[in-house]
Length: 399
Image 1: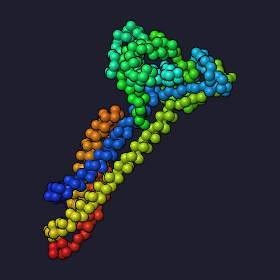
Image 2 (image 1 turned 90 degrees about the vertical axis):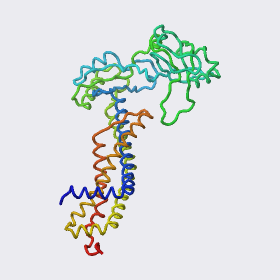
Image 3 (image 1 turned 135 degrees about the vertical axis):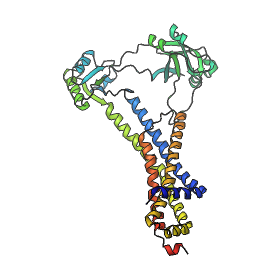
């Protein structure tokens, strides 16, 4: 059985019926492209989410030690739950690389401002160079950072809430924790947020001004503990808690608890992966429909080429040779559709990712999936038509 000869014969048959072949390939392209696009975006979103939850590119394992006071009154006090002595105690535990108070989070700063007698929390962004483009007034510049000027830009929604209109807000004041800032510009704000939109800042001020006037000291209500590589997180965290129970400054007024980011990221990873697989499976239904299209086309091809099959049988072609020819036709169609579908899918993923600002993850698995699935469809849905062609009676085919 010469596979190359059979493949050439199959290719000629495909080219002879271009329109039918292109329609069949188109169905495979749509199915493969849909699955590849969803998988690439889903995996990219999963990796980016997990990277944001951990130490970025670092492979260090961090655990967060919290304190839960037994008396509710302690929750509203200014008492520090952890001390420098507690940090020294934790550092002595075997397997602990470092321990410290969490750094202040400057990415999500909220300050209370009074609007019509009511205090509302507004998100504040710290600007190093240029602020947002203003609709009225001017934007913040690097100069205000160097001179520590108390100036601010606010969004149009906040300006309207405070002073009735953006025009009225310009050159007026806004008070943040007893510090009065002059409003030098108004930028466009959004009155409503969609389910998938991220919160936007309402106020922008120079970063160095904020660091100079606002005393944001380290938060001492928890500890961030970094573990040595290769240690067991569960055993080290158990030792940390035991040491704090024995020597902790607040051991008599509550209990110490561990928040393990590894467990969180693992859980989120499983959820995101499940969602991606589910959506891909739904998109994969189109592959099944395309496979049925391949089978239908192959049956039509067999019925139209009855005489050709008879002539080949009369010239000595075996049933296996006939079967192989039609199988190769199906596989060639679907494999070509799979390659094109992969290219289209990756291209769509990059386009969609750039629009919605989500990184794309291209893995060897997606290449393997596109080739194996398309080849599998060609084999599975061509078996019955190919077998039907091979079993045709020689006398009947030559009538």
